[in-house]
Image 1 (cartoon, rainbow, N blue to C red):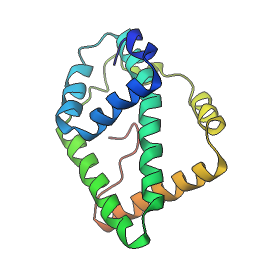
Image 2 (cartoon, helix red, strand yellow):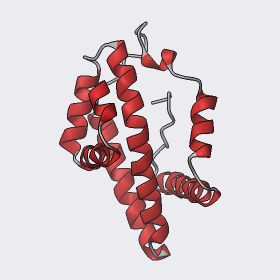
Image 3 (tube, one colour):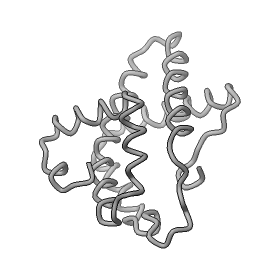
Image 4 (cartoon, rainbow, N blue to C red):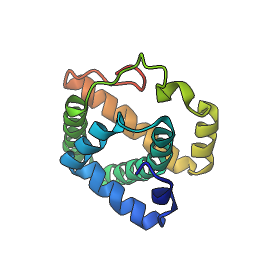
Length: 152
């Protein structure tokens, strides 16, 4: 996933890989374990390659959630929360003090936000916002502190 070859794969091939990576705990654990062994260039390529796949995966989750009847949504959120918590607890700790920390070399946030806005409809954005609000509320109800990017 950290190669230019992966970036050149057809979108459906990348989607298959992301679906497996997002649903298979062992594959995710393997990905996180090898991340620290990558060069800065490979880490940047990995982030680029993962971004669109993760976005597509989240879009699918939001769509599934919105199609559920209200009485089944809490169970759906609980499963997602449990999966995320397991993933978070099983990944190796990050070293935020390293000088080659990829967070210090990211592309401007405004550019990423603009790309996301241009690549989605108002309905998709509203559904995503509602989904995230419901997710945070469910985490709070379960006594789980939401994890924010950069504050893990």
